[in-house]
Image (cartoon, rainbow, N blue to C red):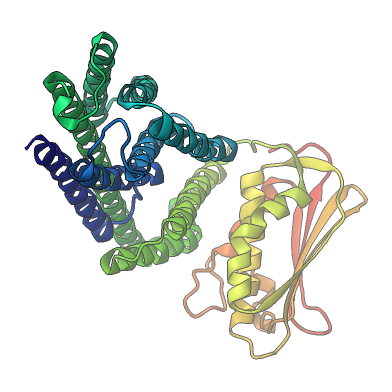
Length: 482
């Protein structure tokens, strides 16, 4: 009668843990922004399998001093479960290195060999002592790693897991004491001391509570992640709404007043990064609605949004300094390196419109520049070339960026083979509110000239003989004075 009762305990705990795994899997399928740790999933699956195999083994065992091979399989799975749970706790504090992960997997082989030897040549007491010692070691490591993590990031769920693991450790020690003080060699299941059976079952119950605590931890992380994503979507929607209101107000603003020019410039310069944020946000929302969010893809899109947010902050700060007529905050900058930093902003548009972007960079010295302001000039000129070529019909679309040192100046030349600028607008292309674009505001080139003038440089436009547009910027090598 004792064997079916013990087996029933194992089957019940296995069923509870199986239900726990199914529940977490369904939660993850519904909201897969946060993926549960592979170590915890491995631990849970191994433990569930071990419980069912061990329960079946208890029903069929006759001599517990010489059990069947399925006990070796079950106990190896228990070892894998404990090992993976320890790796999960360790991964909370630092990533598990490939070498450490490999050695952990290799350790399974000697465990299996040792336990199988004990099954064939040892007895019940030696096998149980072996398992209990390993369990005590794993539980101690888990408690230590969780405590380290909680010092940085308190978590009620991990506290519950720590308590449950402490209970496991207590009952493992109890089992060890019972084995040490025992005087009778155990041959049959009916000879097992009740206190030993109780301690074993209690340890497994505490183990189940530990798994429940980790499940609650991951469920909470999934809920927080979804709440953050929804909050960020709302922030971006509010930003887009404010942008539309700002542009609407700017259409009736004073075109020549300094404050009007500043506001219009901000709206003009923010349009591209805000539009990029809008597209990325729509992408995230669509994937959330479809429930098909790829973790790596989501991280990449969020990184783009963060970069565009940073770019917006730099634009606002730069324009504020320009219109306050404050002294230029210049530092020694390599112009070629600055152009390299701008590439990631421009390349996606260039690829979309199949434009060939060529670089001929020949400046090996630094010059005094405000990197934010000059970056804005280069981006504006490149955006103009990209927009011109996007509407062109020729097959070979090309933009060239050249730099060189010429006398006391560093020269930057940006040219394209697009349609160029109409003759009637050439004389006024740098004037405020002058544009040949149907939906343009006439701010980009005016702002470019304003920035270059602040650097005591020169900017000019010329149309090459073969067509297109070419802007030449000359920046002094000597120190800039506002």
